[in-house]
Length: 172
Image (cartoon, rainbow, N blue to C red; front, top):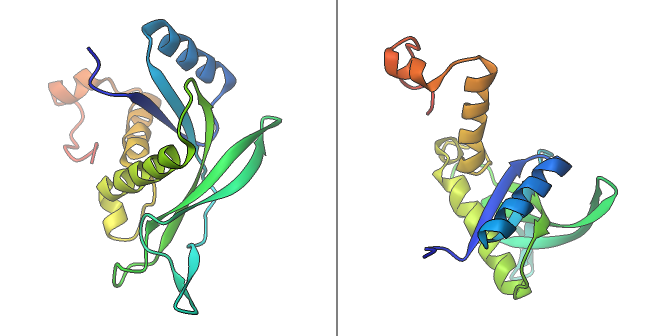
């Protein structure tokens, strides 16, 4: 029995075509609903909105549909979400662009878009660097980067257990 409705995949930058095919085939085989989201690396300026006739920086969680954006020769629905907003004193506002690239189910558009924006904001808030105004990526990508660095440096996880890697804070 499943304890979830939909599996959400985050990717820093573009999914490679074979990655999407592997995900789709596996999820179909197992009978899971999924959605694949690309988090775009391009810096985004904070979202502004009109409040009482004045232009102000939007609050954390405010999101907007940008429209279609081309990648790999196809148009993808692209969004922007305020990951740090105007209500946090002393911290600069930040926004994050992302796009939906593949899914295997029908959905209520506004409900899904609202839920995805909230999930991305909450995952960004879990990244410790976001709280001090440095990072704006979801924690899922933060730890994916750490895992990629371990592989890139040819470190095995067993090396941590054997004490060969003397950096207890490496994964933080």
